[in-house]
Amino acid sequence: MKINENTLLEGHRVVLVPYNKHHVDRYHEWMKSPELQLLTASEPLSLEEEYNMQRSWREDDDKCTFIILDKQRWMDSSLEEEQCMVGDVNIFLTDPTDPSLAELEIMIAEPSYRGKGIGKEVTRMMMNYGLTKLGIGKFQAKIGLDNQVSIAMFKKLLFQEVSVCKVFKEVTLELTVDKSIRMKLLDDMAHVKEKDYRQTCSGRRELRSQRRFSRARSTSS
Image 1 (cartoon, rainbow, N blue to C red):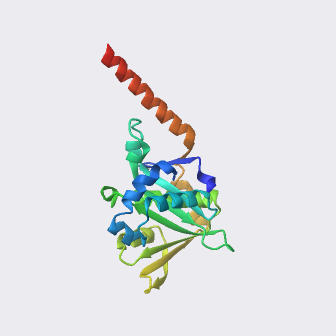
Image 2 (image 1 turned 180 degrees about the vertical axis):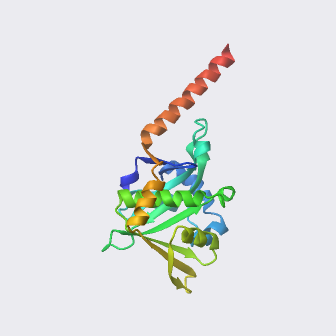
Image 3 (image 1 turned 45 degrees about the vertical axis):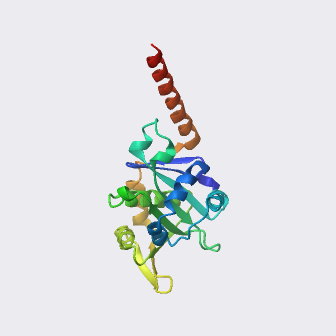
């Protein structure tokens, strides 16, 4: 989805950025993990297929994807963006007849970042984006039955279990955004800053260049 191709969302502990080509190699390494394949019900892809998937997520009108960055690391301009990657979060418009219905997926790929509330923060940020920018009124989450941590997290966010598919070994949870949920979400996410992604990247590159120049001058003096 191109609506977010120049959007950066800055929260308390994370930064969400569009999924770009320079993220693919790191993402591909993540998805070699049998654990992540199981948790996300994904098949391993070749690197070429991963690049094709990235283009699809960027261009298709029914997918909206952000890469999750560790904000503390991202604020260190000496680090490349890929060095700050934590996972990804996606919205899929699953029903062409109802554009207000969306499936929500989140993956915290780096094990050291799990169990720290980051998944909850990212999910709420993405729900707020879906609500305010995409007009989403109902969210679904389809989660493997073995992934009890994710199931518990979505239930804490007031998602309700609506069905269990024993064939695919997954549970479907839903949340309809009524007035009270909308107001609370908007209030809780009021701190999130939306920035121009390309401009922010340019600023980080400029800071890196200034630091390299300063180090070079210090060495030569």
